[in-house]
Length: 239
Image 1 (cartoon, rainbow, N blue to C red):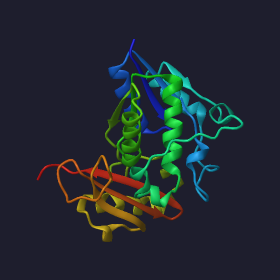
Image 2 (cartoon, rainbow, N blue to C red; image 1 turned 180 degrees about the vertical axis):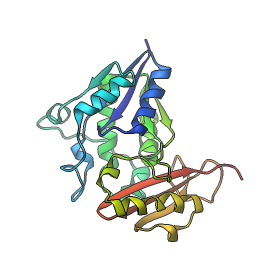
Image 3 (tube, rainbow, N blue to C red; image 1 turned 30 degrees about the vertical axis):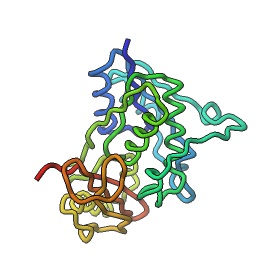
Image 4 (tube, rainbow, N blue to C red; image 1 turned 60 degrees about the vertical axis):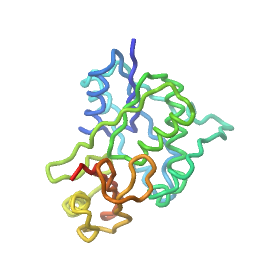
């Protein structure tokens, strides 16, 4: 029996539904993990205010055909004395790694633990978190993990805004301005961002090293709109 894992931190939206549907279409059994990982939130970030509605998340998961929801507690994931983490190297030191020091080590560690606990044949991650996707793929390859990492395209609102659990924190005015991040990526023009730009660049999808625009490369960007920081990316196609 083939087994798929869709790791989530809850606050499910249509982007998560797309992950669950992809997993359901391709595997006999689907497990969705539901765990808000405290270690990947840096100082001043929104762990306490991260949107949580476990009952709604369960309803969505089962509506999409999930067979089991895996909900470990913080104490189960990080028991007293826990002191081992994954080092993600150069790939995790760029862009989001600069803006959020330690973030990718925390992500890689929790994903590694989930993969060991659930032991899926395939895990499904969203393309929106492209650097996270690259980090997890590198980790599974470097550590010889017997799992395939599949990505699912970013799901967007009609104005192009990438769906994200953090969108719930946007004010009405910031929600309108937030769509400018997608427009800036399309045009590769940072001046179009109507917020506080962190970065906008073209990078290799596997290494996140800056590169000339080419088919398969990524246009990546991050910006803050009000108190909410958003990330997004586009895959470049052949001219």
